[in-house]
Length: 232
Image (cartoon, rainbow, N blue to C red):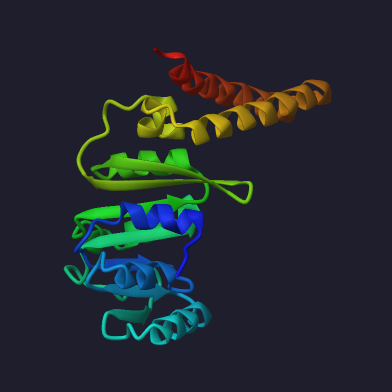
Protein backbone atom coordinates (compact mmCIF):
# COMPACT_ATOMS: atom_id res chain seq x y z
CA UNK A 1 0.00 0.00 0.00
CA UNK A 2 1.31 3.44 -0.94
CA UNK A 3 0.22 6.38 1.20
CA UNK A 4 -0.16 9.98 0.14
CA UNK A 5 2.70 12.31 1.04
CA UNK A 6 0.62 13.74 3.89
CA UNK A 7 -0.26 10.35 5.39
CA UNK A 8 3.32 9.16 4.94
CA UNK A 9 4.52 12.10 7.03
CA UNK A 10 1.98 11.22 9.73
CA UNK A 11 3.11 7.58 9.65
CA UNK A 12 6.73 8.68 10.18
CA UNK A 13 5.71 10.45 13.40
CA UNK A 14 4.11 7.33 14.89
CA UNK A 15 6.48 5.62 17.36
CA UNK A 16 7.14 1.91 16.86
CA UNK A 17 5.44 -0.69 19.01
CA UNK A 18 2.55 1.51 20.17
CA UNK A 19 -1.17 0.97 19.68
CA UNK A 20 -2.79 4.01 18.05
CA UNK A 21 -6.28 5.45 18.16
CA UNK A 22 -7.03 7.09 14.81
CA UNK A 23 -9.90 9.57 15.20
CA UNK A 24 -11.54 10.48 11.90
CA UNK A 25 -9.88 7.47 10.27
CA UNK A 26 -11.70 7.97 6.95
CA UNK A 27 -10.65 5.05 4.72
CA UNK A 28 -8.40 3.52 7.38
CA UNK A 29 -5.29 3.72 5.22
CA UNK A 30 -3.00 4.90 8.03
CA UNK A 31 -3.59 2.07 10.55
CA UNK A 32 -3.64 -0.54 7.76
CA UNK A 33 -0.27 0.68 6.48
CA UNK A 34 1.30 0.85 9.95
CA UNK A 35 0.20 -2.68 10.89
CA UNK A 36 1.26 -4.09 7.52
CA UNK A 37 4.70 -2.51 7.95
CA UNK A 38 5.00 -4.03 11.42
CA UNK A 39 5.47 -0.62 12.98
CA UNK A 40 2.53 -0.96 15.38
CA UNK A 41 0.89 -4.04 16.96
CA UNK A 42 -2.66 -2.79 16.52
CA UNK A 43 -5.02 0.16 16.23
CA UNK A 44 -8.51 1.44 16.94
CA UNK A 45 -9.92 3.23 13.90
CA UNK A 46 -12.79 5.58 14.70
CA UNK A 47 -15.05 7.86 12.70
CA UNK A 48 -18.28 9.72 13.40
CA UNK A 49 -19.67 8.77 9.97
CA UNK A 50 -20.85 5.29 9.06
CA UNK A 51 -19.81 5.52 5.41
CA UNK A 52 -16.09 6.13 5.95
CA UNK A 53 -16.04 3.58 8.77
CA UNK A 54 -17.51 0.94 6.46
CA UNK A 55 -14.86 1.77 3.87
CA UNK A 56 -12.19 1.42 6.56
CA UNK A 57 -13.61 -1.97 7.56
CA UNK A 58 -13.48 -3.03 3.91
CA UNK A 59 -9.79 -2.15 3.64
CA UNK A 60 -9.01 -3.87 6.93
CA UNK A 61 -10.73 -7.07 5.72
CA UNK A 62 -9.06 -6.78 2.31
CA UNK A 63 -5.65 -7.08 3.96
CA UNK A 64 -6.75 -9.61 6.57
CA UNK A 65 -6.05 -7.30 9.51
CA UNK A 66 -9.34 -7.56 11.40
CA UNK A 67 -7.55 -9.18 14.37
CA UNK A 68 -5.26 -6.17 14.68
CA UNK A 69 -7.45 -3.16 13.83
CA UNK A 70 -10.78 -2.54 15.53
CA UNK A 71 -13.30 -0.07 14.12
CA UNK A 72 -15.66 2.02 16.23
CA UNK A 73 -18.38 4.49 15.38
CA UNK A 74 -17.46 7.41 17.60
CA UNK A 75 -17.97 11.15 17.89
CA UNK A 76 -14.40 12.15 18.67
CA UNK A 77 -13.08 10.24 21.67
CA UNK A 78 -16.51 9.32 23.02
CA UNK A 79 -16.17 5.56 22.29
CA UNK A 80 -12.66 5.25 23.70
CA UNK A 81 -11.61 4.52 27.27
CA UNK A 82 -8.42 5.53 29.03
CA UNK A 83 -5.57 3.10 28.43
CA UNK A 84 -7.03 1.44 25.31
CA UNK A 85 -4.38 3.02 23.08
CA UNK A 86 -0.96 4.60 23.58
CA UNK A 87 -0.89 7.27 20.86
CA UNK A 88 -3.67 9.46 19.51
CA UNK A 89 -3.82 10.48 15.85
CA UNK A 90 -6.20 13.17 14.62
CA UNK A 91 -5.58 14.50 11.11
CA UNK A 92 -7.38 16.36 8.36
CA UNK A 93 -9.86 18.34 10.48
CA UNK A 94 -10.20 22.04 11.17
CA UNK A 95 -8.29 23.26 14.20
CA UNK A 96 -11.41 24.40 16.13
CA UNK A 97 -13.06 20.98 15.68
CA UNK A 98 -9.91 19.23 16.87
CA UNK A 99 -9.83 21.46 19.94
CA UNK A 100 -13.46 20.54 20.69
CA UNK A 101 -12.66 16.82 20.39
CA UNK A 102 -9.62 17.08 22.64
CA UNK A 103 -11.42 19.23 25.19
CA UNK A 104 -14.53 17.07 25.37
CA UNK A 105 -12.39 13.97 25.81
CA UNK A 106 -9.84 15.59 28.13
CA UNK A 107 -9.60 12.59 30.46
CA UNK A 108 -8.84 10.19 27.64
CA UNK A 109 -6.65 12.79 25.90
CA UNK A 110 -4.34 13.04 28.89
CA UNK A 111 -3.94 9.26 29.09
CA UNK A 112 -2.02 9.12 25.80
CA UNK A 113 1.77 9.24 25.84
CA UNK A 114 1.80 11.25 22.60
CA UNK A 115 -0.58 13.11 20.31
CA UNK A 116 -0.01 13.25 16.54
CA UNK A 117 -2.05 16.06 15.04
CA UNK A 118 -2.63 17.70 11.67
CA UNK A 119 -5.07 20.60 11.89
CA UNK A 120 -6.28 22.03 8.58
CA UNK A 121 -7.03 25.55 9.83
CA UNK A 122 -6.36 27.98 12.70
CA UNK A 123 -3.03 26.22 13.22
CA UNK A 124 -1.43 29.00 15.27
CA UNK A 125 -4.39 29.06 17.63
CA UNK A 126 -4.21 25.27 17.86
CA UNK A 127 -0.56 25.39 18.93
CA UNK A 128 -1.53 27.90 21.63
CA UNK A 129 -4.28 25.52 22.75
CA UNK A 130 -1.81 22.67 23.18
CA UNK A 131 0.49 24.88 25.24
CA UNK A 132 -2.37 26.06 27.43
CA UNK A 133 -3.35 22.44 28.12
CA UNK A 134 0.13 21.51 29.30
CA UNK A 135 1.56 20.03 26.10
CA UNK A 136 4.75 20.76 24.22
CA UNK A 137 5.36 20.11 20.55
CA UNK A 138 8.27 17.68 20.19
CA UNK A 139 8.33 17.24 16.40
CA UNK A 140 6.90 19.00 13.35
CA UNK A 141 6.61 18.26 9.64
CA UNK A 142 5.64 20.41 6.65
CA UNK A 143 4.28 18.78 3.50
CA UNK A 144 3.44 20.22 0.09
CA UNK A 145 1.17 17.92 -1.89
CA UNK A 146 -0.88 18.76 -5.00
CA UNK A 147 -0.36 22.46 -4.37
CA UNK A 148 -1.58 22.32 -0.76
CA UNK A 149 0.45 22.88 2.38
CA UNK A 150 0.01 20.63 5.41
CA UNK A 151 1.55 21.09 8.86
CA UNK A 152 1.86 18.17 11.27
CA UNK A 153 2.96 18.00 14.87
CA UNK A 154 3.68 15.51 17.63
CA UNK A 155 3.03 16.59 21.22
CA UNK A 156 3.53 15.20 24.71
CA UNK A 157 3.18 16.57 28.23
CA UNK A 158 5.47 19.55 28.84
CA UNK A 159 5.88 23.30 28.42
CA UNK A 160 6.17 25.62 25.41
CA UNK A 161 6.70 28.80 27.41
CA UNK A 162 9.79 29.80 25.42
CA UNK A 163 7.98 29.96 22.06
CA UNK A 164 7.59 33.34 20.34
CA UNK A 165 4.39 34.45 18.64
CA UNK A 166 5.92 33.75 15.22
CA UNK A 167 6.79 30.23 16.40
CA UNK A 168 3.25 29.61 17.60
CA UNK A 169 1.88 30.94 14.33
CA UNK A 170 4.12 28.97 11.98
CA UNK A 171 5.85 26.25 13.99
CA UNK A 172 8.80 26.83 16.28
CA UNK A 173 10.63 23.63 15.33
CA UNK A 174 10.08 24.21 11.61
CA UNK A 175 11.43 27.76 11.88
CA UNK A 176 14.44 26.75 13.95
CA UNK A 177 15.40 24.14 11.35
CA UNK A 178 14.66 26.65 8.54
CA UNK A 179 12.28 24.24 6.87
CA UNK A 180 12.19 25.01 3.11
CA UNK A 181 8.53 24.06 2.64
CA UNK A 182 7.50 26.44 5.42
CA UNK A 183 9.58 29.20 3.80
CA UNK A 184 7.73 28.63 0.53
CA UNK A 185 4.44 28.86 2.41
CA UNK A 186 5.47 32.09 4.17
CA UNK A 187 6.49 33.75 0.91
CA UNK A 188 3.19 32.75 -0.67
CA UNK A 189 1.22 34.08 2.30
CA UNK A 190 3.14 37.35 2.22
CA UNK A 191 2.28 37.80 -1.45
CA UNK A 192 -1.40 37.11 -0.80
CA UNK A 193 -1.52 39.61 2.06
CA UNK A 194 0.32 42.29 0.08
CA UNK A 195 -2.44 42.13 -2.55
CA UNK A 196 -5.08 42.31 0.19
CA UNK A 197 -3.44 45.42 1.60
CA UNK A 198 -3.51 47.11 -1.82
CA UNK A 199 -7.19 46.28 -2.23
CA UNK A 200 -8.20 47.39 1.27
CA UNK A 201 -6.30 50.66 1.01
CA UNK A 202 -8.41 51.50 -2.04
CA UNK A 203 -11.67 50.41 -0.43
CA UNK A 204 -11.91 52.82 2.49
CA UNK A 205 -14.43 52.67 5.33
CA UNK A 206 -14.16 51.56 8.97
CA UNK A 207 -14.55 47.83 8.27
CA UNK A 208 -11.78 47.93 5.68
CA UNK A 209 -9.58 49.90 8.07
CA UNK A 210 -10.02 47.31 10.80
CA UNK A 211 -9.23 44.47 8.43
CA UNK A 212 -6.24 46.38 7.08
CA UNK A 213 -4.86 46.70 10.60
CA UNK A 214 -5.28 42.95 11.15
CA UNK A 215 -3.56 42.08 7.87
CA UNK A 216 -0.61 44.35 8.63
CA UNK A 217 -0.18 42.69 12.05
CA UNK A 218 -0.25 39.29 10.37
CA UNK A 219 2.38 40.48 7.89
CA UNK A 220 4.61 41.55 10.78
CA UNK A 221 4.41 38.00 12.15
CA UNK A 222 5.30 36.60 8.72
CA UNK A 223 8.30 38.93 8.51
CA UNK A 224 9.39 37.83 11.98
CA UNK A 225 9.16 34.21 10.83
CA UNK A 226 11.14 34.89 7.64
CA UNK A 227 13.93 36.39 9.71
CA UNK A 228 14.78 32.85 10.89
CA UNK A 229 15.89 32.05 7.35
CA UNK A 230 18.37 34.94 7.36
CA UNK A 231 20.13 33.74 10.52
CA UNK A 232 23.60 32.20 10.20
